[in-house]
Length: 227
Ligand SMILES: Cc1ncc(CN)c(N)n1
Image 1: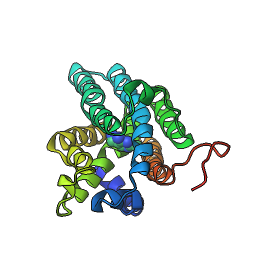
Image 2: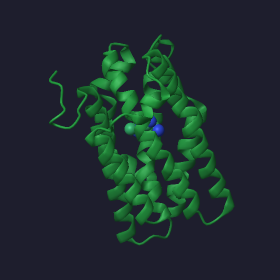
Image 3: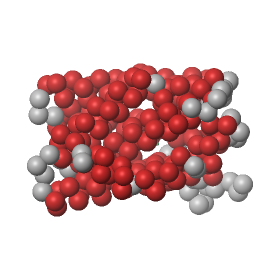
């Protein structure tokens, strides 16, 4: 069995928790409170600014120009396609691009992005890919699952989000990252594989924490507005 398939199988309980989180199911049935989505969208924009940097570090750590080019394409697609979805939603909320970029990251946004950047900067290319993969892969899976709900991809508010993450283009990028992790895991010692699994597990956990943070609009305890 491929390394990615082993991880996927082992981490199913956590993955399912992401799919059944009320934030995710609320996008699927259209009942999610728009203020929660507003909070999410601003935090996700900040998250993606740092996430895009992982692809730049990936290009630096690549050992051939083909891989380097693919990381450059992923960087471009994140900044100019994925984040343009967020800019469009921001317009609907009357938030300017400047306001988006100057927003304050929540503790979870900060912890998640710093953990990934730490793994990317201090680890091997395989460690970098293990850190970034749950993000691409789980969004693709969630997008596909929500797109199966009748009318969800056409929903007047959440439809664009579902269409973007269930798209073939997004799926191709996620698939490339899955295959890259499998290639890089080949021939690695059990100690190294354990390290990759640990990083993959941690960013999978952070994915859940990000949904939960958005649902509860969690900021620092001293800044928290009670629900
Ligand atoms: C928190 C998070 N995780 C994943 C994705 C998909 N790139 C995202 N936009 N935001």
